[in-house]
Image (cartoon, rainbow, N blue to C red; front, side, top):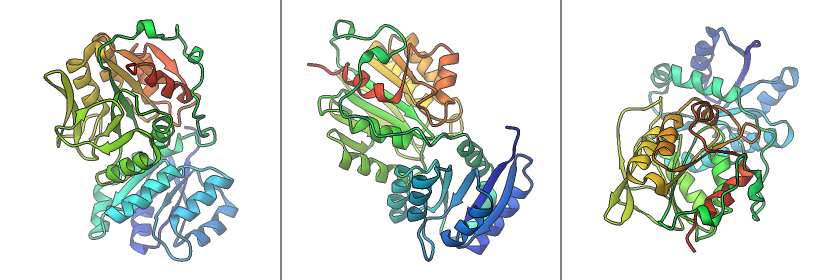
Length: 353
């Protein structure tokens, strides 16, 4: 990136504004263009110079962050990193912010925030750099009627190619994935194959996200718990802060959820899920690696392909960040490269009937 990333901080806490300002001031590729204690002050600063990335608190005086975010996305879509308190109540609002177009979540505690921000310096800087790469202008609602399979870059799948054994669909995604998953899952019928999902998201937020998806979809969506069976019409979302793996119990598939060290900087990790899927489901699995920064999931998707699974990567044009899918394509992990609009029908083509 030749130009510096111009960042605006909008937070009603003077401590947060100061700590974040100090953190950004020493970065060669980042330029702090200002701070504001609430969105109305922020608007005045943005009239002078428009930021590349906004760090935005949710609960603020005069105008809340969610309202401000929706105004930005409605007029001039701009990458926004939500800086939210790690609370159940805040999680629901923050998930609504992601649905409104926020690029990422950065969590902060209610107590000891100064020390926490110092400890989380690298994570926040990574979130800013990741958000700066996000494309936010081209996402639009999918049609409930799925597009023709001819949009696949290779020979389209057909019913004669689908094995009769029950399928497991594994999906991995990161930046831009919250919107993508909403668009995909709301297009699926209750007859869809069982789905297991890793979306990079902090602890506490995945439960609220699953509840939102469940309220909008015909299929059931829930935050996964150990022992949950993978079955048609159900999507299981890995909890934030825990890895999810697929296992086999007799004739059925189920998931295990447990804490563990971050893999590829993430917990949950897409690679952890995909590798378990390749081991226990093999050719009875289908893998989708969607929009996201970095390479998490690329190795696991390759292992799935080598185990006989059909594998898909989202194309660059429909990805918010073409990082994870690009890496999978480069490694030869993806049998098919498809746009976001083609994903629902591709999933439903594996349903039994």
